[in-house]
Length: 235
Length: 326
Image (tube, rainbow over all chains, first blue to last red; front, top):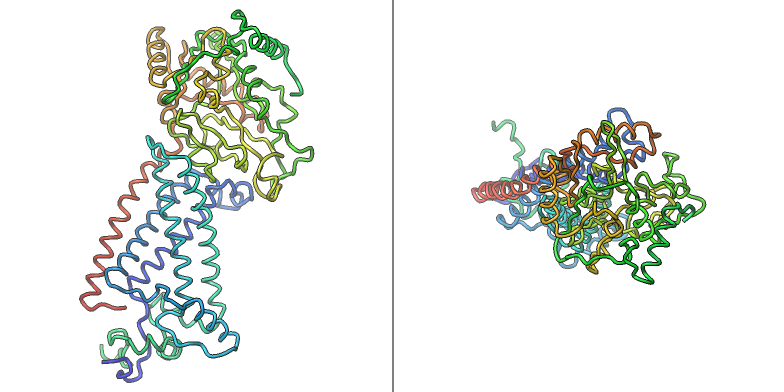
């Protein structure tokens, strides 16, 4: 059965439970990591954050470092879960493809009223590029973060150049992640993108939206992804 | 240097004379003994021998003078605290750590007995100051010396906060932050003892050790120095400090009186200083713990997290293979 055979489905399942789980684990741990990471620089005391009511703990490196470690472990779990899950199930719909830069330019031009938006698969070309940008930087902070954890262990003598390079990559990649998150959230300033928001909560998007904006994906939908029109009465 | 003490003047004269004539009667500074620097270096400080002459301090100041900070005249005020740390007008202080004084002799009175304690960086086995530097511009040399890169330091002073002895000291108005957004970010450069790692690289003793006229300070292979200290402590029924503190250091003090008493005596002096000055006088709390002890325990989670991730991914894949969702 193809999606079009279903009579007037209301919603389409876009994000599986696994996708939503890894997205939110990465999102929440990354926010905690950013806050506790900035706490590793002597800035919360200096800039008065720790003087705000209930925020005195923010200037305690001991505490923010422990939080950073734990949130880092959650991030590592989520990254392994996400990457390995994609490999095992051979789902690479969000991985950038050849021509994505050019296609992204076309999409942006279309948003500005110049030309037609090219038909998209499950993800727009620019979404695939954004994923690669944030994903690559998350891999960098995670890997260099693990180097830093090992370096902090007693009895470990690590090469000073390796330490310095790891720290610098860690700091720079963290800044890129923040920029990436700003861009990711800014995408929802554009009305056309907002229809995607429910997918990261309930997993579903509106059928009409999927058909219009992701026609290539819509034609490839598997039957179990399509919510029947009369789902409520079926049960 | 603005102010040179009489002692320092004598030291300089003596050192200069020795350099010219190799006169053995003069301080040992200019005829530095060879030291085996092939492995980790340790320092053994015998407090029963320290007479508190301060020649170690003088030697350190002469040796490192060229590296002392020369701040701009108009040091930027840090926003939003309205403060900055400037020791440039207190260069003559020799009784505490400052950016211009990397070693000093603490003198305490314990039940009528004066104990002189040469203080300097302990050069820890697992130094929190270096490990927790946000930019990793502080490193541990192969010989065990913990060294600050003065060109890369932003002067956040986190290293001082995580050091049990508050050894690194900050001078504002110098360094990298002055080239970025001075006043808004950063606060200067941190300075401390680097164990004269340059001299060690040449097989020579640090300036303080070679200046010691009584042999209260000895330097050599770390395990050897530790053993010397242990034997000495046992021999006099004394006390050892530095072997276990902060997870282990490369400086071993032997004292005839318990370090608890020394610690309390220093704490009394410290408390009498005005607040901004207190961080320049290190106490000697026995068995002080390493800042990284907690996180060392948490590091296990990085062994568990990937395994849990693999397990969860296998579960998810199995679910998908059985006809799960997109």
